[in-house]
Length: 238
Ligand SMILES: NC(=O)c1ccc[n+]([C@@H]2O[C@H](COP(=O)([O-])OP(=O)(O)OC[C@H]3O[C@@H](n4cnc5c(N)ncnc54)[C@H](OP(=O)(O)O)[C@@H]3O)[C@@H](O)[C@H]2O)c1
Image (tube, rainbow, N blue to C red; front, side, top):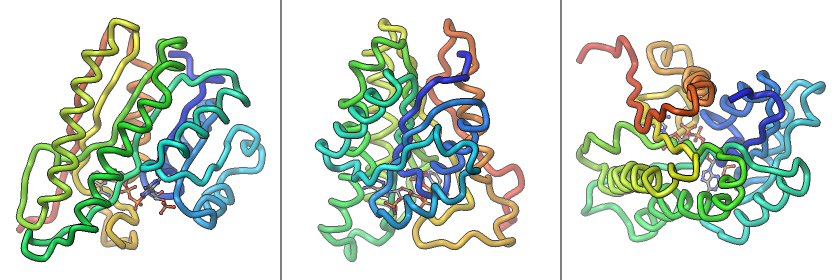
């Protein structure tokens, strides 16, 4: 795919992995719409974009759990740039607690964001992607294949997301639409109230995931990497 002037929606891109993907795409000449739930976080993200690239980015407050919000995102990008080439379903949260302590609210928020949010993102863009033979990338996790204690909600959401992405890959490839799920290990972001620091040097960096995304877009149209696992090369020894 020649990336110049290609358009993308990236959910959950006010910080972390999503923002790094937006910055990488902008640096390659793409036009992007980024989402997050808070006006403030979207504002902060836009402040980090060099002024000469600001005309190529739209920041939209949108909750992936709201079909209405996601319909609006699709409409805005089509009205502004005429098409959608790439959708990155990245927005995600984590609640980690034993099943005895996990609350109904935490369960619902996890599934609503990490799973139903991706359904809403895909459902509101798929007709446009058919026109462009576009690309859907979901950001799952190694937690979508490795289960762990206190991970019931997060594991369920990410196992579900891996299954969802593989199934829609089979539904959509005959239209020329590609779907890939990326499954990272530990990435240095704000995930789960973490603050990135120098102690995170061993972790995958958000820009490493962003590079994988643009590399995927450059793979010849005939080939479709459907699932990618990414690990830190040298995690601390236990
Ligand atoms: N960090 C890791 O170690 C790691 C590893 C594997 C997979 N992942 C996955 O990577 C994805 C990105 O996470 P991250 O590490 O970059 O975390 P992050 O730094 O916390 O960023 C999460 C982003 O998602 C947005 N978001 C959260 N809920 C949303 C909702 N309902 N609607 C729209 N946007 C929402 C947040 O913006 P607002 O707060 O403004 O809403 C923020 O921009 C997630 O799906 C996560 O599960 C992360």
